[in-house]
Image (cartoon, rainbow, N blue to C red; front, side):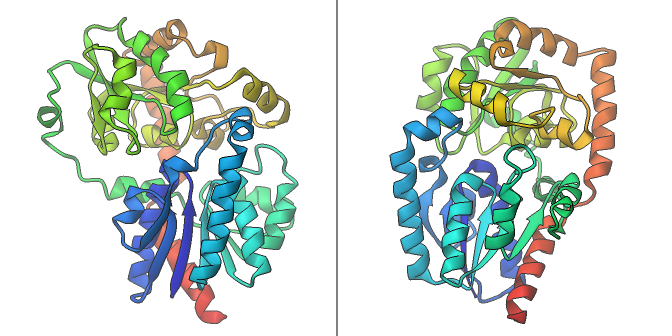
Length: 369
């Protein structure tokens, strides 16, 4: 069968690649076309557009880049019709993907949504649209099932695909030597995968690093950028950048400073103490604070429904406060308590298999039509 996938961010590229691998196991004749990234390219098929040309963070940034976004959407719609897939598989990225879902539904294309849009965070009435334009929805967070049920919608809970990616991870025993790292303990810097967030957040991360000379700080580089891009922030400091090695970096680190997003959960599942940071334009934050209806921004805290990892947002995202939190993470009872909470989190998340479960459900649904 023919599958058309759309993933608009680095995390979606990871989950899309794992789902493609699982679909190939279920459907030997699987044919793929997609908007995504390098990990999806490695699974085969044909890429239409890279996510690095599609992703914008914050309300203001979306408005400023609206022309580009609309152009991408128009191109995706036309390409979707030309390919005429048996199934459209949308991965998170709701601002873009829900509009594509509506278009596909109008043209008789089956729509599968993998990784639910975070409608529980704001504008919950979007569930009504999802019910109309999505044939099957696959959720990866335990609390989402009850949320959708409260709106009269039954969904499939398949577990979390991060568990698949982590289970498939094979540590590189030569990680330190290959990247020229010295004998100091490591602190991982995960500044995100989008240009705007890196510009806003990485300088504060690097300023924090200067306060901890006994630790080696290492940046997890996003695959859509190169070392030249990061050099404008590093400016000669002894802070290396590693690419395509985030899991190796985390597994070798004592602590991490992490931009809010999927990486906060990945870091926790590796049992690495972390502080979560986030900063964007003042306009975007003002709007977000008016409309977002959740207590926390990090997935760790949302899943646990309590403050497990510190969140430093906007004006609190500065080198002084990040440094204070990092000091607490590196030793003592605060660190030990976080690690105990991580163990509870891991138990809540369950076992790997989300990609395989989702692939089986999609193929079964298509076989029944």
